[in-house]
Amino acid sequence: MLTVTVTGSGGFSGPVNITTSVVDTAGVPVPGWTVAVNNATVTLSENGTGTAVATLTVPSDSAALAGTVKVDVSSSAGSMAVSAQVTALNRVTLSIGSNALGQCILPGPITTKVKVGTTLRFVNNFSTTEPTNLTVHVEGGGANGVPHEPDPGHAQTQAYQRTITGIAGTTFSWWCHDPALDPGAAGRPKIQVVQ
Image 1 (tube, rainbow, N blue to C red):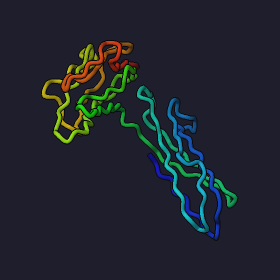
Image 2: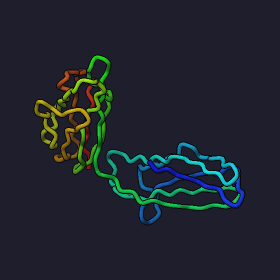
Image 3: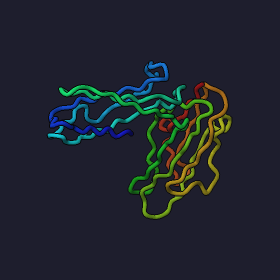
């Protein structure tokens, strides 16, 4: 997330429009990357300040790892552009929370595409007050560098992380081994390995 702060001067007051984009070094939009602003117009009081938040989204299977976020602002007083270079970490983080019974909340029967060479992280975000370790069960992931996590798993706020290796086009599933919550084959989240 990027915070965009706009400040008026010289007695200016009124609406300021904010637009965003993300481009590569040649100025071409980065495929699949998006940047959205939560407030496309901020209204300033005389010489006042307004803010908006721009959120950059990078697909889990993106080939690009760097780009430039461009922010253009315009008002009756004129326009201005600023930019910020960004670098993706080449990792995909799957956050696993808990329900009131202390069971895993899985993202559902979704498929997440992950490129070979990407770090895959399963983060224990259990909300229980009792320390709870989480063990991630992985079925069919060993050939892709993601074997079943050994017991006792990983503690709250920690991650089980592995780097995706193997063959593009393969898919494996995962769920919570401990505390146990297996939704069955049809309901398990999946990881699809891509190039």
